[in-house]
Structure formats: structure tokens, C-alpha cells
Image (cartoon, helix red, strand yellow):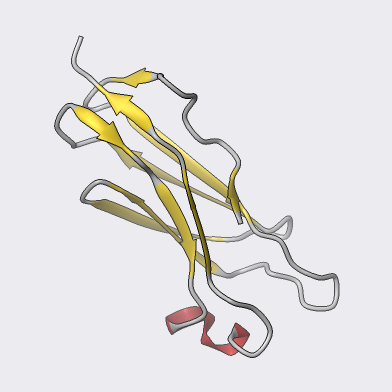
Length: 103
């Protein structure tokens, strides 16, 4: 899995702006990964999204964090709603870092 639309390094984002996290999963043609739950975490905030037919999941968070550096993550776990995948795949996660600052 990788973050497709991760913030650019050094990018300053304002509190109350939105962060759109997009993750692309890898898989085999034998077992498509559509309709799988991916969890996005940014500081204390979380959102989840289902992968589409291109194995891409996107979730938007309205930023409610204090100023600082954050590493948004996207995680696919083979538990909970994805439990049936445990025999075929291992869970995966990825992250990127960006700064949140007031004007």
C-alpha cells in the first residue's frame, strides 16, 4: 500500500483546512481488492474508506490538530471487515510527514 496523494514535504497546511488521504493497494488479479476498508489516521483524527475497483481508497479529514508536524497514515488490516483476506494478504500501512501551522 502507498499514499497516492500524500502532502508534499514541507507543505504548511492551516488548521480547519481539509486533508484528503488517498491510498492505493497492491494485489493480484486473482483476488481483487475492491470494497476493502482502509483506515486513515492524522494525529487524533481517523476516517475510513472502502477501496474502489481500482483498489484506491480516499478519505477526507477536516484538520482539528494543533500546530506541529504530523505523519498521516493509511492502514489496511486483515481483521474486522477485512478478516476474510487474512489467508491471502498481510496487513500494510504507510505514512508521510507534513507541517500544520497557523497563518
